[in-house]
Amino acid sequence: MNKKQATIEPHHFPWDHPRFRSWIAVARACQLMQQTLTRALAELDVKPPHLDILINLYRFEGITQQELARKLLVGRSNMSMLLPQLEKRGLIERRGDAKDKRVLRLSLTPSGRELTEQAMEIQTALIDTSLDNEPIEDCLLVAQSMERLIARLLKAEGDLG
Image 1 (cartoon, rainbow, N blue to C red):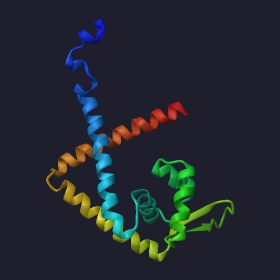
Image 2: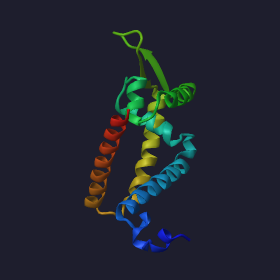
Image 3: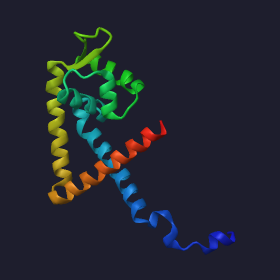
Image 4: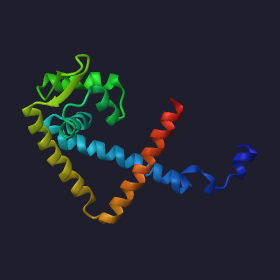
């Protein structure tokens, strides 16, 4: 052990800092939520990344692949891997844009819409069960805090690129 290591006080370690603790707690909760959601959706043969796509197409019928990738914070390569899987299952379809033939619009098929509704019911029940002991005010505070964090991280990402 060198001199510098010997003089470090325990409260100077990053894991003792409230912001570090918060960051780790959010990351771990996120990971556990994804694992739990994956298990809950297994009966529908839907994984969380697929559900993200399906829900966004449910909400924003006819968006482009690029718009979808931006909403999901993923690259086009991720989209080009996931979309064909959903298309092959008959859950989504790509249609040409009436005004611009270079643009493809994404939409759910009727069976895609039905599966998305079933998956959203499972997800909503899981969220309700997981957070039923948390006061609504606390849920809103966490949501607002995470939305501010998302905005800062997106801005920083934009500043880097």
